[in-house]
Length: 372
Image (tube, rainbow, N blue to C red; front, side):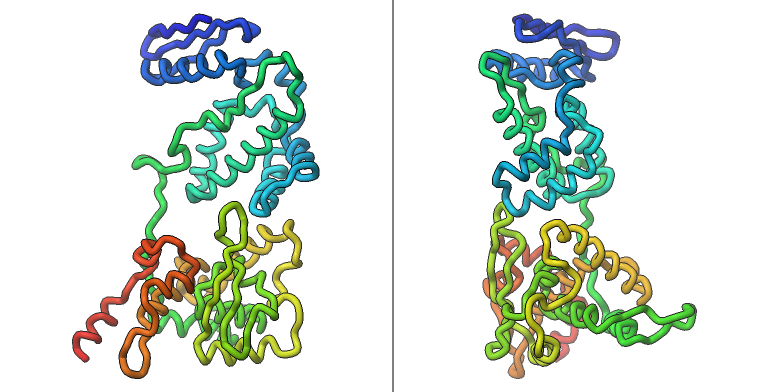
């Protein structure tokens, strides 16, 4: 095996010669350090008999199966985590024209860059990349012919921190917004059918969505946790919801108990009367409809807030608002109702630092307490 790095103008060229490669491999880099690092990485893989897809002969790349076919085969024959299924169905649709041989290191770098341009959260980027990586690992093991070189999974070659944003990229903005009483009344007026003077008609508010809004605003449930609720998860005697949390490891359920305030408890009890099955009619109950249902409801919230004149608000801001409500909740004696640990349990947080991220206190509230 021979690896060399030579300067070519203002860039550096890496050359790799190895018996497993059909021909010498060349690649250029902006700096010598990157070329040396990638060369060392290739040497480690080739010494183990593993050949990255991008270094295979072109004819082999063109005859590899389509990625969407591999994904659907994986879904039928393997046992993916529940959280992977919806992601993989989406990837199968998005990557219809891509072949397995086309999943090179350059392709995955461009793919991650595209996800960042869409301002997706680092966790969402990792979920998509890692779900696809598991599919390609399975496909490689399922199709490998003894004696043939093992094809490396380029998704496993991404450096640590590939999903995070650097200073020059679009960063995740902190949400430090609180809904004022005036804005909250404006939203509820829209939900009650009040028409704006500059609009031809009122916003179409059906009873199910009004109840759905009140539930999320009053508890801080995540969107998916709320629309997946069943009537039998509501304990009317104790006034609590037995929620199947949606943020467990690899899609595992993370159950928790969420209390209801008296007014919301009264509303939800009336809503659930004589109902069975799903509490709300938005989701059809299938895994395939989860992402579509989330998108539909997110768009519904957007149109609601736009009509109410708070277009910068998002559905997830309701979770922030509810968290602040739990933090500031006092009893008739002026004592705090819940401590930090209890609020973390209600909100479904394993890390108590999340409360500092979500708690955004109004300055006027703090000033009123000083004047009391």
